[in-house]
Length: 528
Image 1 (tube, rainbow, N blue to C red):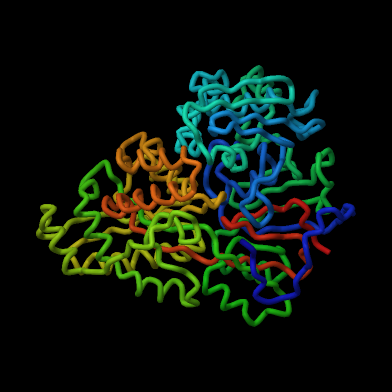
Image 2 (image 1 turned 45 degrees about the vertical axis):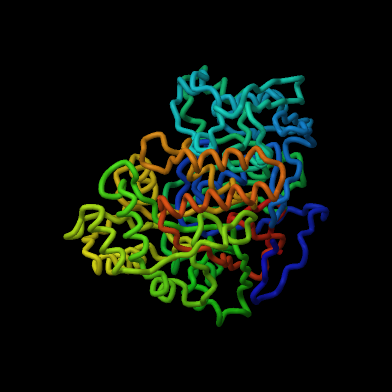
């Protein structure tokens, strides 16, 4: 999946083999939200992953601008024919970052892999006892139940054995949560009684190392002088945090940053007249936005209520207001049509009259009261959460639903939603691997439903579990199509949009490639 240059001077191909010549020009990325922390396993939001992906690396990685898997901290691997045994051969001579708070005494090895994944797999891991944490993505993937054993075969060889086949398992090691931590650093923090510092003072192996963070202001990183790959031309990498999209655009035009987080449609229009100063990239991203129902408490634990609220939403009107360029696509299913297994037979429905009848059948002939949480950050699939909430509030009023709109600061929003304080909240997802399982397992499997707030359906679970264990592509497609029929019947979400992602950069930026999930990687990216 290639990104498209809409206008501006194309920088030419990514010159990976070109000899590094450090530059004093800092590279500034204007981002939309503060990172929640710096321990990759704890977080799954895009803003946080974008920071941590510069600092940490997995055993494998996605190719720049695509979904193919490439070697990273593992140079090669073997997968058993039944997709149950995965053996990784680790890269020799990799150094962890040397920082004022930690000086490594050895190179990366198998112990670091066991430490990183041991925290995900073992609730009784010593580090978890000292620093209790919820590993959101590993938990949602059901990783602890899936892995039968994890072994160190020698200092540079690690083997994972699964209880059941999983044809998508290799891709897990390229995802942001799987960034490898230093076991030596972890042991030092335990000894000092400072385990929680692993989320504040990160130590990774990536092309950039952490310097400082000021909440809601700036994250500063610097080139890693001991990097196993090509030394970075960019010495200083800065994430400048600006919540308001117009502010980020103005900073780009003023030369205060060289690239921003993805734009809203309205911002793209505002930049059209600056083609001589800015280059604009776009990609049809692997993403979805949706409204998620609380399935634990009334009234949204009632399927008829969920269906009524869904078919009362006038998506056409919302898209005219939020996506005036027409580049977004109305979402019917939980993943976009570009992904194999998409069910083309399913449709959205807009039918306020039938919605009112469904509410009567559900026991609400006089309507009901509900809260709707508006997304507090801008996303390509939801460029204005407050406006979307207001439009939906009007739609629901037509069927007798009285809606109170609420919102919170981004970190608080996520925390409260995970605790199930909402009735309906806005969310979204961007896939990395190009596989349907990357959307379904982390969001709609029973592993995500620890509190009863989220979706858990035995029939749906059986289908996605079987698909994950099925190497035959045609059979997997059929299973995912069946799973989507259950999703559409049960309606845990109101699906909203799959969007094009636009990212503007300055004309002097070289080497940048858009990722299919809208994320950013700054390895070998520099200003000329």
